[in-house]
Image 1: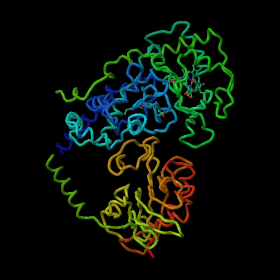
Image 2: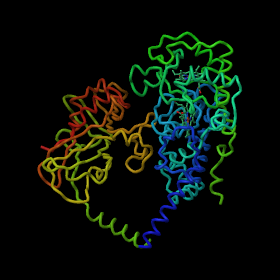
Image 3: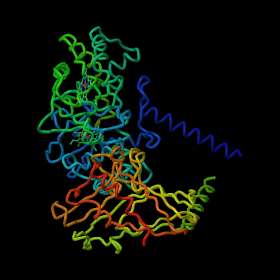
Image 4: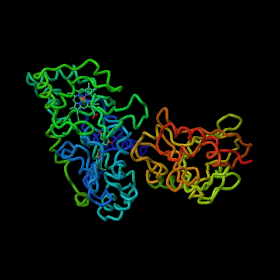
Length: 342
Length: 223
């Protein structure tokens, strides 16, 4: 009987320990909705996060060891890519979309500009296997990691078992990416009452709420839906967006609404990187509506902003830059030798 | 305490291993013959050679006079013609049944739940990497009516989203027994599907639904 109680108590203690441990590894801001990633199936653990981080920065995941996830998702660009409007992969091949920034992924249920991927765990399979990105496949990755003594040692340390499997690799990559929470911008400090907007920023915020918030819904600045925001169709790429996945006509040329956090670091903008500055984006939204069937009803009443109002919205958007996130050392380059050190 | 637990685990695993009863055996066929890969078949003038057959069977339920008497202990089976053993189903107890139901393919919840091990590991080649989702049923080969290079055809049938959901249920009445053989009559597909049009079906769309609609009819009690 006493034994049973002891067992129960120790179980409770260890559960609450795991719980508090996960909590410190993952920041859930009080004014954010609850994160949607199912942490029960992949509980955060500091060693697993570090393994994921090493994998994220290691070109071993590509066929010829030249391209890592970070080649296209740089920490200094809030994990977007700024040199190219379209992504740049193995053997200098050019993809057909702009690499999106990576943060607040724990709140996202669909990934890629068209929502092709339905779960963060499965996302890495796409670039690993894509002939223009990393040109490899998960079996080759498992074999390469299994033949690498540092990885063998690290997997053993992290999972208490040195067999390297898809699920261990993908869960570790998810764990690292889940820790990429961006919630330390001036906007966030204002939400927490520790900072105040300037008059211009406040005016920009009001205009933003009136014109942009239906899609770029705060505090994540996306409603996670697919919309057409009126970009002229690029006849060369002729990218059908969401339609590629659903095959529903009404989804032609719809793309995922991106977050607007960290815009100063994530240019160029839009799925094909066609705009280099926020100013160009503002001019786009105040242009005449295009003739596209799927053009969002939310934009059917044209957005009217004078030059000063545009500047005010931009001033507000700049309060969404999260310098602390972009320069956070915990997110930067690391390699597998770090993990094998005691 | 620890010893007791280890002992119990050991005891149960041995006990379970010992008590496995074969309930079903699936046999892929081409007309009257048991399927052999790379063998030349001829069906109404079409020359057919199959090179790969792999599919998921899930949620097997056994009935006796319409009342459910057992649901399969293992939820998802991956049947692969290269592994003869994968076509046998075992349960933990023996019982008589006269109807079974099961699904071909993977349900939408499993499809959206992230990474899993075992039969659902993406190394099986049954997961689409560029668009999330399991391939429920994969059949590849060569057919004289396919206009593709070398007359190849690829049928990767999957998808869990409306209206292209490709999971299908099978319901079969059997003689009352504790074991039955089921045939998978592949020739049926080549009588129903026009290979000159549907020779490369590798994502969820109207074409994959056409093929998915024929899958339940493949499963039969051998005559």
